[in-house]
Image 1 (spheres, chains in turn blue, orange):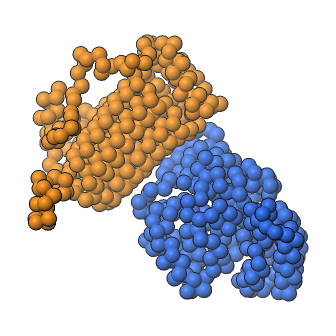
Image 2 (spheres, chains in turn red, blue):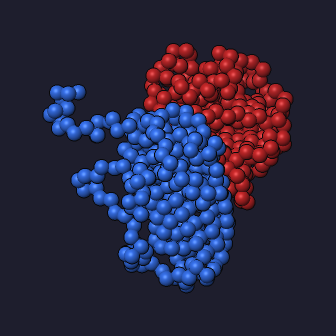
Image 3 (spheres, chains in turn orange, green):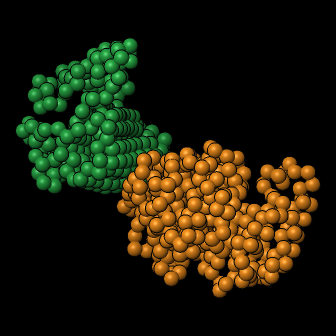
Length: 315
Length: 276
């Protein structure tokens, strides 16, 4: 089933960490397997935020000599970052296997991503100026608490509660997906894509990489590919309505925008609240009510609808 | 009453087999009370705050208030919770001040419900009789499989309104999404705004009236001819809920089943092989 949510402060920043945590807590019943957040903080110059993991949560209790392996893998990542000329500004250990690095790096980000992910077990969850992508097994309260997301100040965020239907229950199959190699693009999705393998093969031939077997990853890579070819976000999203097959509602976020798209069957839910200052959207209105407890006017976007909103505070 | 509704073209079905059509009779007691129904007084009124309650507690509270004889109940702060005010099988005036989540007012038979806010997916699913009036918008599958009563949304609704509708009237003041009236079998649907694509797809019977633009008709849905009796009925129905057709009731577009689908022929399976 899955639950998705998004919010954007149009003219100011807010505690998007707490707001998204509350929204996803309200959607817990739609998917208990994993929870993910893509939070957009305020960029600090050209400083990049790198979120990555070097093992799956499940491996930590089952893997042979996994604790030493995790240390070795992380040391290898550090070595490779240094090799490529990245300067570590701040290093934070969110969990034993997931890390947050603030780095100063002016080189080729794709090359950096490819080199890091070449380390066994390593996966970059996000790399961007403002984007911080956090996902793990468990519900919103657990993941938010584990990664200390309450109090995260930013302009916008998207989130996901997952009920695994087509791939494994692990971090690599959890949403959101970072639209590699685009620095600040992330996607959450509710639905099923029926032309996943066909689309994946076509994109792999074009040089894109897939980290999971989850159909939702296709949307992130598809949008990244379109934008790489020069398409604007909303145009890429409109193309996706006809080129992606199946039933889907997805939310995408970029450095300064939040967007949603719904397939022509409108089979997956989405409720939208829109005001001059704030946009909130979610699979169910109860999630929006966790941010706005008072009476508000909401509606369902229609079949084939694409909407994009800008965070003016970032402009 | 049945004769007049027949004259108005409201019952065009040719029923056979196990399918039955029973008409409402005010003299039959069974039409009014279920065995576990409460004896309520409409002049006895109660109010409660649903804010701190779970959906189950809200529904139990409604039953508790009905068991005390309250025939008019006002519910505050429903908070878009799911499955609220469901399974109400008797007469009751229920005023909901706020919005409901999914499956609100489902499986009801008889109550008169007003909702000042919005409703989520599948409002009044399988409604048998009574009246539900929503002041704002509604989600998809609005009035799925309803069998009777009036279901009114004064705002916009999502997709698949009245999917599998088997009776009653669905009235929408604004626009509606795709696949409205999908596999509709009986009853009336009035959409005063625009209707999405595949309107009336695979409908068996029933009638859809549209005031705005139709993005596209579904399989076997065709335009029908409006009669004077229908116009009178539409005008009365709209007036009841303070709504108006954009260009008058007589200019609504009427959509009915073309009845050209395979299930309308009289061929035996062996004959189909020869003919088709």
